[in-house]
Image 1 (tube, rainbow, N blue to C red):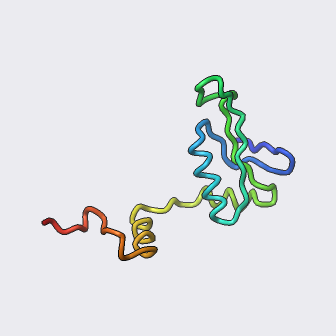
Image 2 (tube, rainbow, N blue to C red):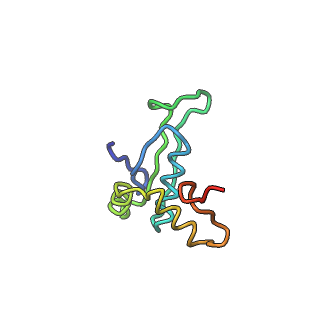
Length: 103
């Protein structure tokens, strides 16, 4: 993807679906990197490809390197997510299905 610049903000991710853009923006925000979404999607048509469906995730130009590094890093595994959830509220979290005892 060729990065596009808009008033000091630069694209770090482009998609045709809203939920993907939201997930990427949230991941950047959670890591302390300011991010916004710019939708150039034509709402008259249900398109997810091409220039009429472009959705961009943008960060300030000075944050481009950190954003690209974060987005190219390894994703969190399901096991790690389970561990984080249990640590957050150990009394309410049930063990994963493969670890439950059969009754």
